[in-house]
Image 1 (cartoon, rainbow, N blue to C red):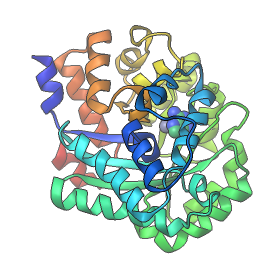
Image 2 (image 1 turned 180 degrees about the vertical axis):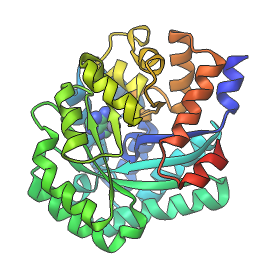
Image 3 (image 1 turned 30 degrees about the vertical axis):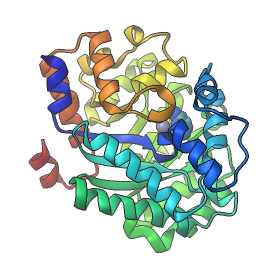
Image 4 (image 1 turned 120 degrees about the vertical axis):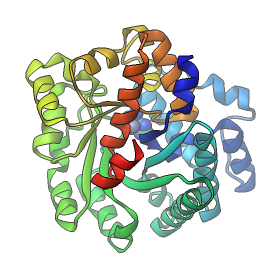
Length: 325
Ligand code: ADE
Ligand code: ZN
């Protein structure tokens, strides 16, 4: 059965925001533990708020939910809960985003956030056998100066952070605004990725490639509107970390049947399947694979290719990548 094959095949996840794995039960527990007032009193109320009509309506709730995270233990518990969950789904490697500005703006020290996440990732390697990398995302609705400031704060922890990325509200916040900060980051030795072509136009994908020199594009599904871009992504095998359930929840596609993941795979692009914000979008990586397979009718061979791409597109070393496939 293809569902068992999907469950059992070793997979890597390359696009998951750790703050987006905050389940409603845990949000309420933490609100109580930390004496934070939320506009919700039950899990049902929180789930009812998960009716998004575009990216911004989700982001408003995502930033609100993040306010319950205060201590190193909170960040540890959040990360550990994600790792335990995906260990059962046969995730063998994960590359996790965190949004430090969301927390430093509330007075939580960078060190507290990083240390809680990092300790859980180390425990994940030891106890669950999941290897991992951590990626710092700059919030594009904030200024490039704010991004530069957070980059400075990351320097002492550089050996724990492999890459910098760019997330949050895409429309009207083109990658070009962050050219300088990405250049400084690259000169410091960070790899780069960026969300582009989720809601924004193909031009933003070109900017991420040409100005930010990214190794991967997060989402990138709107590349399909520009045949030259599709050709370029194919030739260079620049990976796209696609998040099917997220795209449907945020109305990038009306249904999973309309999703272009299969088209992109057929065109020879290096596409991968990811969860983005699993607590908010109705599924972790396994559910993303299962529901997309059922909607788009992927074959065993195509599922194998998607799983293989997840390791090929990862930041594991060349030798290690091939050992893991
Ligand atoms: N932050 C968390 N999830 C995101 C997404 N899908 N797009 C942009 N920013 C995000
Ligand atoms: Zn994302």
